[in-house]
Amino acid sequence: MSAHLLNILNQGISNTPKKKGNISATIAQRLALPKSILAEVLLGNLAPLVAFQWPCSVKICINSRGTCWVNGNPELPYSHHPVNHLIIRAWGNQIKDSKATKEEPPAAITIRLSVKNGAVGGVGWGG
Image (cartoon, rainbow, N blue to C red):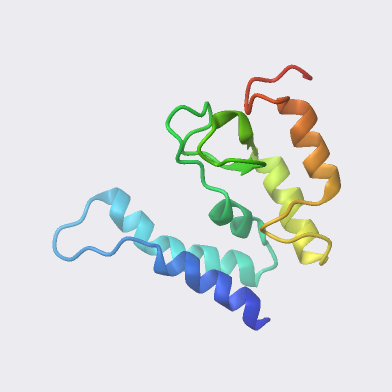
């Protein structure tokens, strides 16, 4: 595994919440998540890298708390393009084949997201 990929995984793991004492089921799942993600990536599924790179936290975005590729100002919802699990998987496969990076989707996905979502992130006009 490349040093770059290990660095990406470590960044995702370091962002995992840590809590002592009694913990909720959600916190317990989040603490176990890095191991699951590491296993996925080691098995060749690089899709989690995309999800970790592009989490949406803009409350007024229709995909808030989901995954959005942002093309422009990340604070403006019209720059957000929701990314579903199929696109995340395809993007991950392109990363695996060295045809894309987690920071920049391949051209075909960029076009698909831009056309599908129009200029108003998530308010589709192109079907």
